[in-house]
Image 1 (cartoon, rainbow, N blue to C red):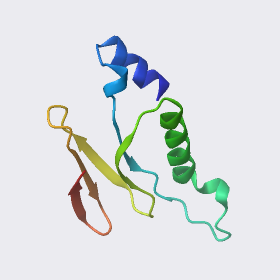
Image 2: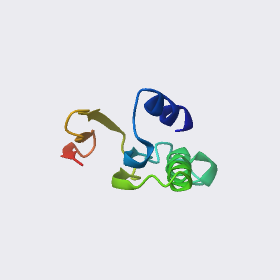
Image 3: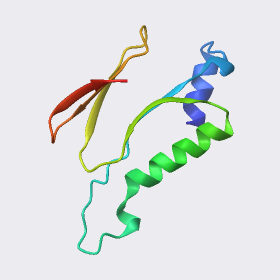
Length: 94
């Protein structure tokens, strides 16, 4: 996130106008003991939220967690984030 913000600002973004949308963070690795150490997705989401909060960047939309992977497509002109999940098959925009 720090490197992305640096590149955005270097390219001309105005820091106070930066907004965030989060997608991902699924629990992809099931273990017989369901160890928290294997829940990388949840830890990634928590860290993203912490870094954004520290920089006063509001989260405008979020599709995180669960147990299925996502693919995303972001439209830079409209700001729409299209999210597709495999199981169950779905598509939504945030």
